[in-house]
Length: 571
Image (cartoon, rainbow, N blue to C red; front, side):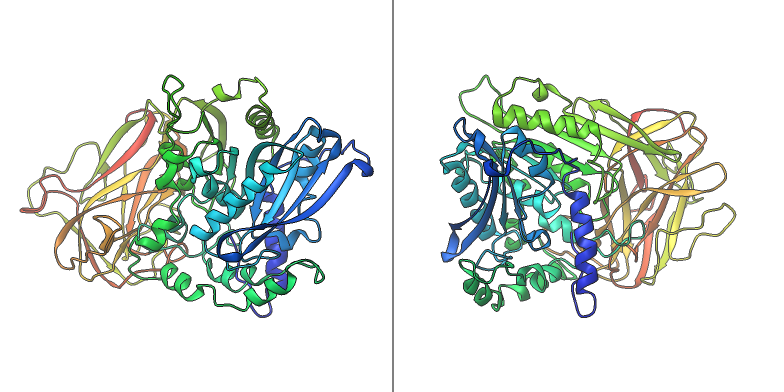
């Protein structure tokens, strides 16, 4: 979500981030406004909120629609300093203000023109978002209906406010794009601290919360004569919880404690009442794709036959092969978004609630595949296909039944990575184990998360497993399909570390999901390692033992890889 802003790089970092945010800026194609300058009004308001703070809200609207009342498209953002001096006069406004929507942009608590302290998605930030929605719904020109839309952090705030449910009935629709639904999952993969990436190195957010505590959380609006300017300057000098933020986000044993629970909007998915249109890129290297897929699964759609409202009236999920800064820039997305907003905020009967609900674009070794409309996620016809680890570096349909004790061992030095040799005949690194299946007899589509279900013995506490699922072409070329992360101290759950060095333990590593087709003639590969240094900070060095077959007193079958196969084929 951000890059570091420090000495010598502030100007460059802000410029790069501006490009990313404009690209993320919802993929809108500007449409020339038909209104004359005399009917366009740009206003700045201040909304009182928690702890005596005020939120700066800027709106752009066409007054010709005031009499019939206008729904509001709101983005609650910490990035508005990049849109000076009129952040609400953006591409969203270009498209939707001429259609009779009011465009609103508000500064997140503790950023730019809002007073108070940046709260890292916490309870104060959540309440401030609720207060902004209610303020906009009460405006004399407003229809009382508000939709929240945005990418990255700007989409995270939409989910955050919607999770307040009945506290904010004015929020009719949300469009979170590449957005966080649980802050823990942005910082950590099952207890492993994310760090950088090797696919799009400029597109990652490992330094949050540091870039916000030291960067956007210190910004002020560019109008020093404006209301509350002196208050924002005063509040920016405060510590604002930066020490706690950093300690929680960079712990080697990060328990899922009250800090993270407060910033988990997914746990409150059952409280969401707004219609939901999620958009995410399967190749998002910043906000991982499961932030959308797991939230989608957690949303209970309302049953209109009951007297109570159990969830949103409907939900949609749009998944592309884009990364964090792209994927929602084509006509298919734009038409879907237009229809979604018209239906939810203006009551247009256009059938969008019956779309999908899942629209996904897959990929294969030869590039992206077509978009497909699916009935649910996980896909209803998904079949769990199991491949077992054998001690001859093979993934096979059946478990290893041969006699003996089947222990595969490697040394963890904190230097291994998924950038494995790309041709056959080259020995695997001594810091990892490598397994391959037989060639696929037909194209095999996998949608969802592969799971490594493994019996493991670690010589030290705080060691990791970072397996990688591979597509191996007939010429030996290897492509990463999915990657997984697990701090073995958290194999039994994230509530508390449970180190057990020197003893055999069962661990399940759920990989980050994908929509991927392994072509006929290609093999499924598995790289088992304990560090993936271009993607995450490594754990302790030591020795890892893996059961590749029966081990007396431990397991009768060994370890396995479970694949979410949709179009099943032989191997």
